[in-house]
Length: 331
Image 1 (cartoon, rainbow, N blue to C red):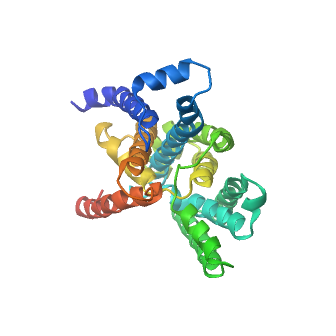
Image 2 (cartoon, rainbow, N blue to C red; image 1 turned 135 degrees about the horizontal axis):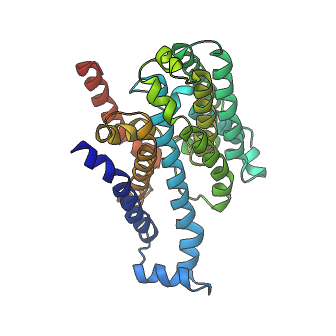
């Protein structure tokens, strides 16, 4: 039964993503009929519907797929690499580093003179944070890597708190807090062009770890006896996470729990093979972000709910359940 489920998992996820993508183009404060969307895309003549789809909803859709996909994929890789079901991309400091970089751009006013200053600084911050974590954990094992990531994340978090405490005016603090909540609103093709190359390269590096992760499930020594280069695998995972998750966080803000939840949704159907969970986890992560983004647009209220807030509100109870489940089963 599990083999049948695993065989149909990827096609089912792709079909789900297709339906969610179509809904993402239709839904919003202004609903569009399916015929209107098709005619607007087919007819090159300028129209309000065509402008809304091509310049507002389509880049938002593409970013949702990229961000959710890389978060789910990196979560699956890190859980396999660290052999820890509670591991997720923020553990290595990529998200915190990107957030700190973006906060620096906002705090010092670089975003006022350069439209893409926030994502650019965020990307640099993510790469720097993971680079420091890698340097601190060099010649160390898995525990050293986790401790280095926690240290870097804590340091970046302290920097963010300091910026909020010393913000020169309430508007600056509000701008920083708004960005930290995470959102796909008001994103353009410029953000897609900036993030997509790094996300794609990062995803490629992460996918190269699939065979090694299956061997690492037996332990590092057993994996090395099978010809697996553990250091190379660790480097691929860290570099892929830094590039992909760093770029994603840089353009959308902090979106937590997706990298934690997505692998756990698909792993029970795959026989708990870490390598087999990579692609399904990416698809599940993209679906989670798309559903959450649709919810932020459709939930009633004067102000659109931030994506990161909604995902955290759903992800936190799941995390608590997962902790209790791991403690109960010893898995």
